[in-house]
Image (cartoon, rainbow, N blue to C red):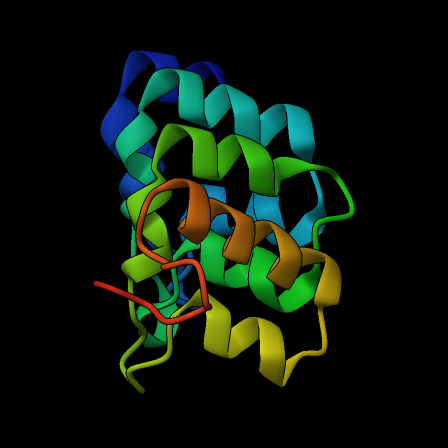
Length: 125
């Protein structure tokens, strides 16, 4: 962690599996470490790893057990729009992985951001 403070660019480096330190921390459920990375650089939310997955895509896959989803969406609600190399966004990944808790938060964010109209149709996503 100290290394990231001294050389923030290390937080963007991908390992041999094409994952950044933030991707790994999210996947392993290390909440404090994730929050620390985001303190260093909020733009890490947009970091693309293997197959174009962002950290939000990983939360959509593994679930929101550590409560990071709200934090990610508060920092950058537009991250919902990011797509993988297979053109999948967080909503696709949530449905594919049967994560209704995450789906509810994503839809609520879309609605509050004005990207979803009153009857459930997406305006810009």
